[in-house]
Length: 243
Image 1 (cartoon, helix red, strand yellow):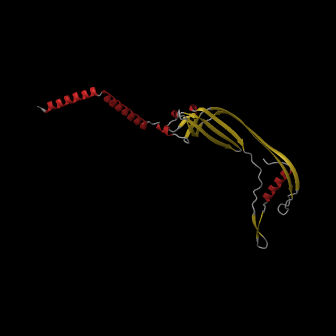
Image 2: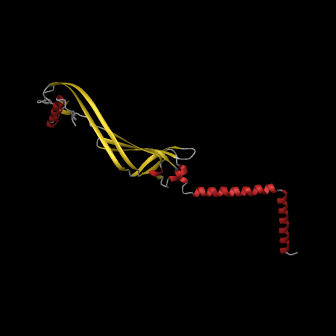
Image 3: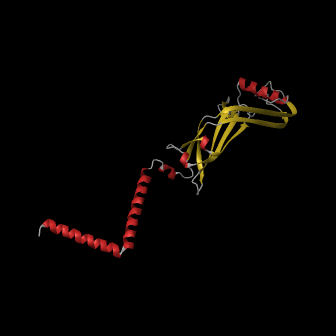
């Protein structure tokens, strides 16, 4: 019997045995086939997840920085109002040795300072504002955003606050999103004034050498400091304030 004939005979025997097993145990082979198919599907899903360029979105957690590209047309109008009333009773007995020309006086004065500011804006806010993820919806995975930004111009301070909800599907690979894609977008402006307060001259104690060689601390004033003190006291005596 040739080798080829023997191989063919073995193949036929194996085939007959396999067909018999399938006929006798059909449920076993069905479960085996389904298990292999399910395993292949899981492997394919795992491979896609590892290669998915947007899988970084699943790593976002509260505290993550998101950059919102602002391009909304806005009309802004706000008012600032500052008022202060001062009551003052002053009685002075100046030291003639320090400032000979400074007169003694007693004054009772009340004065008021008020400042009202009004601002209107009609235009667009352009630029990028960094905000923080403050919450994640467990059902949809949407991100709750909040952030603030402060601008200061002289005595005026403007605080910009942004809040809203965004889907992770709208984020690009740099975690940026257009303000057009932010749901429940809210942008608040708060303007405040910080008026300057009256301050006395910054007079420092100086070390003076006495005639006997000893030293002592005195408020030795220069001519310009003396003139400044005289001017301030005259204004206070007249009930005036400084700008």
